[in-house]
Length: 189
Image 1 (tube, rainbow, N blue to C red):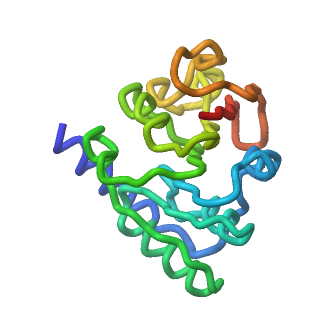
Image 2 (image 1 turned 90 degrees about the vertical axis):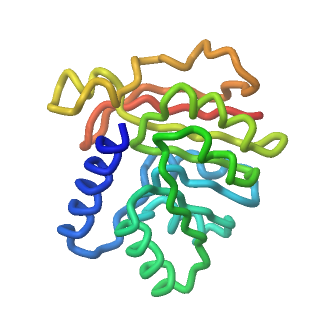
């Protein structure tokens, strides 16, 4: 497992190194639902280069951006400095759920374009403050069927509609855009 993690991390680091440095647009699902977020802090899980973190910081949120790629987090730090934004970056291995124990509680958590493993998903309520919002938007199985995207990293369409946990579902949508097929959820603690 450790070798798989290192190989996976290395491939993402290489991918970020090979990309041209540019500010990417935030996820449309986030733009469309930002007003439903609770004012205050946000944890952006699997933030990559931080396009969504930058957007949220510009909207006045106190942002903590988490990823396992040091290269991506360094790029985010540089972009946040250039834009005079204060974004905390956290390098964290998400292959071990125990690593979540070092995180604080947040008013909001977002996870975009990343499928959380079930054990990590179960920890989300414990990381949210009362009335906190969890915004989750990622590829679904339809995306995997229509592309070379690995099915194991895609949600089943509507997979979390009837999830029994400490969070109340306040929104679900399945949609398609230029990048693929997605499921988008909003939950409140």
